[in-house]
Image (cartoon, rainbow, N blue to C red; front, side):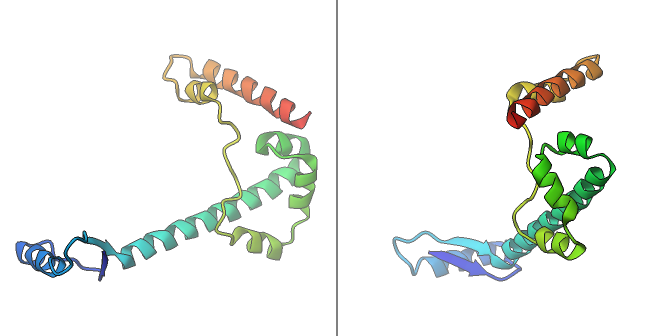
Length: 145
């Protein structure tokens, strides 16, 4: 049995004892208390952050594409066709797409070597960063081909 409680739970001895007495009426069932309001607030907050991230990403993508399309396709890891679509989006379309609860951007690489290079704590971080950039640019060329 899952017991949903209100926003405030009593964590006193009396509150715990009362909960135990209440749950003992349900023999053979375990009782899990969930603060439903807290779960809903966290979920709403997460969805709001996803929408804000989507809007920021789409606006940044449009700006990059309009300034330098070749560099934007490389930096964003998108094709020329996708760049053209993003460039042609109206403000209303950007807002509608950004309001989705699905994240529009994603990590471009899932290679452990790249992550290790980017997070390494070596003396010369610029070399690690350049090495990671070389590896990622090679992957971008592979996917474009």
